[in-house]
Length: 388
Image 1: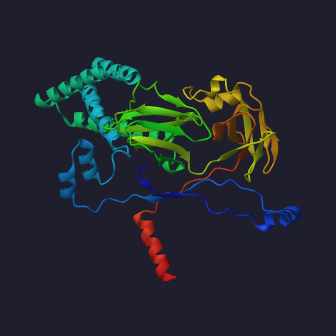
Image 2: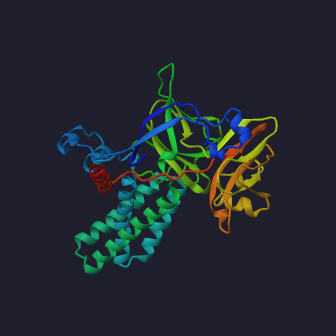
Image 3: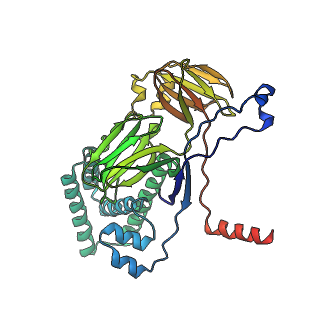
């Protein structure tokens, strides 16, 4: 989970009834309304290990172990490996630009794009060797200068900035989804992933020893669609590293898995699905929302289509505005999309779900996670407690 760790998970306590001020007289005399009862999850902020550096390095067996010992955090759940690879390629590309090899730079950049799309590992090794040869020859021949150093620094900083911006746009808070290991009667190395979310997700698979994790197996256009409630077998040679994506190419999280069966779940589901003879959509939140019902056969339901949620509202699917605590008929089966209202509401999809026959949906509202307390905030909180 990056800077977070799943500390505890368990069942939900008894449902709480809403305050009397928010209940009508009729409701106050009767039993409290039923509320969804999701599982509870407790997260803790990761802290740097207090183990001495020498002891950590002695136990290191692989390159990721060395990085984890030096950086004090898990490389498997961070973007350190991606940043190191990006910087290495930036140094090679910056060297080509600084020495005036523009054609070679364009050729290497085009080759890397093709390698990323089709996962051509052999070609990737050739491009890396070529860039290393050019960089080494520049250093050995003494063609370095202040301008060369400035170009290398600028290209590296620009590459890291672009990487940070892309990750900021595509990654959501990792506490929004959890991967729980399910009990298994027989020990097996087969890795099975079950999608227990209310929507379809796209899975990208990486080797457990891959510290970069920029190009999945099958290339950038690869991936596996895991429908709601279905399972997928990754293989029998763990460990693996998996990433899950939702519409808008939003990364739900990355997880390291070993042998066994795992379940992907939403920590705080925005939509609650239930069986009903009269399917309907209910806005259980305190805000107005826009709802779009798409056919499950529509191309806008594809997780490989960029800007699919935006296109779903532009191709003519009916959109209804639902007030708080209001309901409307739900045409099932369908792809349910919940948007914000307003001029730019189509750009902000709050939730989506695959609704099947004889199912109703209730929108519970979305939550916004807070950042873990930093050292400054921890010190301030401690001081506040002492003063009071």
